[in-house]
Image 1 (cartoon, rainbow, N blue to C red):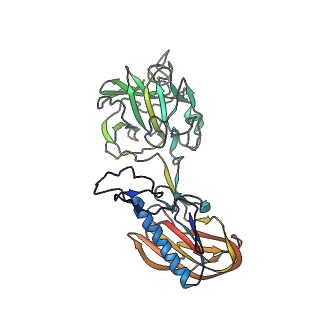
Image 2: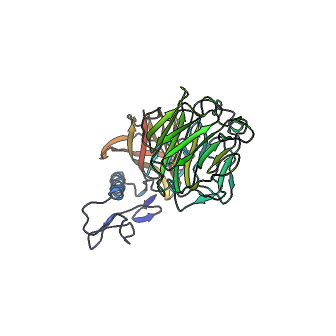
Image 3: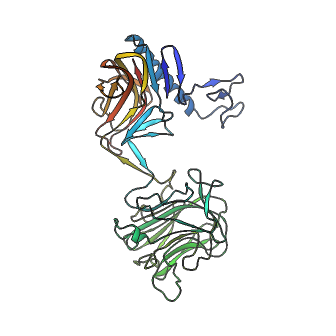
Length: 444
């Protein structure tokens, strides 16, 4: 958030101004270096930062013009480059990468079909799903910053006694329909650094060779040779041909049992085959519902060596059987929507009592068309939010490709020095009507 009070410039956030150095390179905001993609004499570069700077300058320009027109001497501008300018969010959120407030809220817990979700970002490698199933780190299992597919960390297993275990998922997931007897999808990212025979990626229940008999059944998946992966339990076995082990490289693995009883496998989104041998219609956790990552259940042997990230077990069909897909490009999350939501700015103290205010916003119709003053409603307050006056926003033209401006001027407010705004949404729906607010400024 950056604020302008009178002729004094206060930078309270991460506002940026692009500059050219003496040798023509684009400098950072401090002018103290070159961007990571800079090369002397290069003819192209990543211009996202410059675009952000243009957006910032345009919002400042519109604010200054309206402040002068209505003889308002103070301005307060926020481009959502950080969260310092927002006091609270309700059913909306700031998008850090895009630097806007969105009516779509990403949930790190996944959706109602997510039974287990391990982002591998915290020291306990905890389950982020709504079930919050207890995880136990065995051996030297720990998060590692040496490798990560997404985020900063992944789970590291050194191949000598390391594995992660979770208790019976049926017992821990009473609110969803028996996930281990019906359809399911297991997907994760794996970076194997070395291998011996039958290194287990994961095992659910007994792995197909339980001591003392053939029941209860389980499910296991591992490379059983340099170019084949064996998925098996006592209900049968399926062997799928994969590329040879590619040490030190992240690959996406997915296994899905569909409603037709067929099990499908994918490697980096490419279908690697299907079969009906395992796990059939059997409960893949049986009476022993322990879930193991990086070891063989029952005997805790055949340890995996490498890294695992973004492990998810779902009680639905995430993919279409036999059809290729694009692997996830970000950590597993789900966008949730509320038809309504709002956010409130951080209070700013004016240097004198305020009775009249103005406002400028820049926004985007990410989906559908948002109607000003109906789907996007702006309110302003000068008494720290005790009383809000609803603005009448007027379209002020296209600011840049896809980004629009709206202005409200000469809004009478209850007198005070506590300057705030509130932006509210209505009629929002996933991929039907979604609003992105890129910036907001107050004039007073």
